Amino acid sequence: MVVVFNFGGQYAHLIARRIRELGVKSVLVNPDIKIEDLKKISPSAIIFSGSPYSVYEKNAPLPDPKIYNLNIPILGICYGHQLIAYQLRGKVSPGKSKQFGKETLSTKTSPLFNKLSKAETVWFSHGDHVEKTAQGFEIIASTKSARIAGQQNLSKKIFGIQFHPEVTHTQKGTAVLENFLFNISNIKKDWDLGQVKDSIIKSIKQKIVREKIIMAVSGGVDSLVAATLIKQAAPDNLYLIFIDTGLMRKNEVLEVEKIINQVGFKNFKTVNAAKLFLESLKGIVDPEEKRKIIAREYFRVFQDEAKKIKKVKFLGQGTIYPDRIESAQPNKHANKIKSHHNVTLPISLKLELIEPLADLYKDEVREIGLLLHIPQEFIQRHPFPGPALAIRILGEITTERLSILREVDSIFISELKSNGLYNKIGQAFAALLPIKSVGVMGDARTYSYIISLRSVDTTDFMTADWTKFPPEFLEKVSSRIVNEVSGVNRVLYDITQKPPATIEYE
Image 1 (cartoon, rainbow, N blue to C red):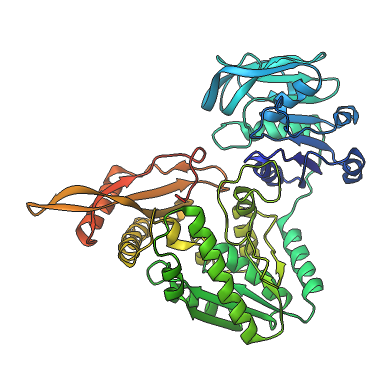
Image 2: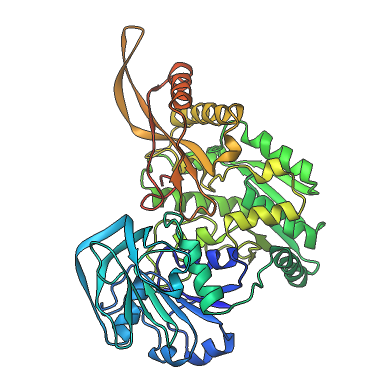
């Protein structure tokens, strides 16, 4: 068991995910956990995550200093690295220069850097620096801008690193975590998704018994896997609702119905609520307001459908860890990036919530889907957000913009599939920008929308790099879009990593 202290940084859950990926059970705890409660968990190792705070700020999250006397190996990452120095009477100060992005790390001999070279490419995201280590610590890594980018106290097995080993941008970050887990902490592997699947199904059975459960499905991987887990536990009591919000992709309703029929769900209904959603979103441009309106109307429709079924007690959702991270749930120290409609339940929704996937990441969800024998073609579908095209149209939602984006998205995805690229990337989609540019078609001036294409390579959807498509492919897609879709005269390709960007635009 590894305990990850969640100080509100965006990578706290990603650290926990990486630990599980290496075959070790991990749990997250808030920084104010009592030492007595921590002892009850009985961790074999502790990891301090990053944070949006500075350790010297008035309200900065700090653990009980007694934690350093528990004789449990500790690894501090970024804020955690600074925290170790700060709490053990070293010195942390604002840096003269900040580090964001890839850097070259110079390493010294340390069990933490076993099998690493003297110079490694790592990823930084910080402004503060450890200026002086605490007594008993030695410097084990540095960069041009950070003299103390790594520290260790071997006798106490306490280590701190300024860079992020959990993100894919750090080339040998996994090796650093492996060294800490298996060489320093002597932990044994104990995390198995097959056992997790069985445990989830058993838990749902015990909770539902003979009660009815209603659930929305979108045709996406998360909701489908969550629904299938519930189906395994209560096949006759699950009622699936697909709400056509009018914000769907081209032919999405037909695709969803095809998936539902092939997987073999018994109770399924499609509800056409397009008019309701489009009227509610009229004139709305703020992304947070759009999400909240969609959530509000979504659950209104749900409540109406639940009343028709009668005596429904539970609401199933496909919420996964990244949804909860970006919505800052439940840590009070986290910065909220964006609301997710499936983690912002209104008080009026009088149904008990069941979230089979709430502790899992996207790749884990897909693995469980395969264990449930869901056809691979469905498991490999790219993620599609709950608010649908509403957050891929920046600005106001109109029928014209929806029509344009549907056609553009269809062209992009069809070209990915016909060129054998769809299953090689993590996620791809098109977004419509709320601005127009001048163009020329057939010697005539045009003034039309700009489209941005986005494609990312990722394994966990917590970090992502933009896909390096051949120029010929992008040229073909762009040519088809401007020639076949009326209202578009310019196509851009997004080459921004996550972080600093999110995968979706809103």
